Amino acid sequence: MKQRRVIAEIVDAGNCRYYEKGRRFVLSGFTPSGLCDGAYTVLSRDSQTMRYGAKLPWARNGVVLTRCPDPEGALWQLKIEEGLDSEQGGQQEKEAAKSCSELGDVYEHKVCRGMKGGCPFSLVGGSALSEDIKQAVKDSAWVGTAVKQESTDLRHYCRFKVALAACPNACTQPQIKDIGIIAICVPSEIGADCDGCGRCEEVCREEAIAVRDGIAELLPEKCVGCGVCLRECPQEAIESDPVRFRILVGGTMGRHPRWGQELCVVDSSRVVQVVKSFLDKTAQQARPGERMTSVVERIGAGTLREEFSL
Image 1 (cartoon, rainbow, N blue to C red):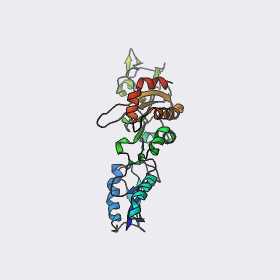
Image 2 (image 1 turned 45 degrees about the horizontal axis):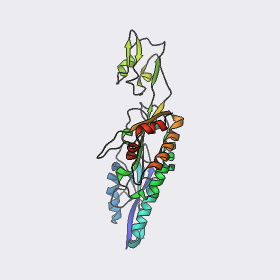
Image 3 (image 1 turned 180 degrees about the horizontal axis):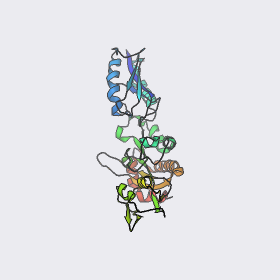
Image 4 (image 1 turned 90 degrees about the horizontal axis):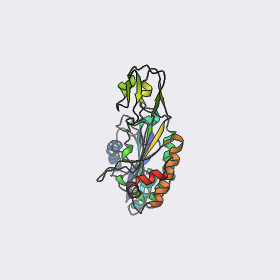
């Protein structure tokens, strides 16, 4: 007996935060690992109809185009593939799913809109850093070990997760990922052009800057590095260090949630190197099947900070 399956492929990524053009998934009745709920909500509706042989009025030459409901969502193309014998289907379906999802079953990579220049709070622009980090993670010993262990059967919550945020608002929730990267821009001093207008004090949500005796004063222990005061100062009197990146490790949610621990703060030229080195070292020390959160907890955040202090 022949089996039918639906292949979903992105033909236009738009401003999607999760997937790129060409990403493919096998839709076989269950939500594939790595496919977000928003996309599956609409894809499952059409894919089930197609799998059972019914025709959709809006199909053209057997191809259905479906837009994700997310305002930033991608445009998906659905097509039927046939020809697998039932006795061969199980193994071939598994291999096809692995091929279509690439590393989607073992690795999740989230990037905020700010990394693509789509947010007024962003401290960085362009996606070069995101792509470099994605490649470094894929090439690392940690992800390589997961693939060798046939981790395509991992549950969603066991996949290795990385999140990048272009500012401390951290919309991608890097604090609860295996690796979280947050851009920061910390004011360093108040220049002579400060006239004490108080605009910086008004916009700072952390109360990390105050006007005293007619001049602004920094309170660095409260600053989170959002850079809003720098943009809002009408005199451009606030000086700052270059944009740097906080690297957090070992975060997770679930039954035993843990906040990511700060590994180090580095400039953009060192981020990729630190991430790759960290993953390679922890892969050597990890026990079979051990998750990153447990490795960080067992080794100790303090020990890791000493190794990666820059």
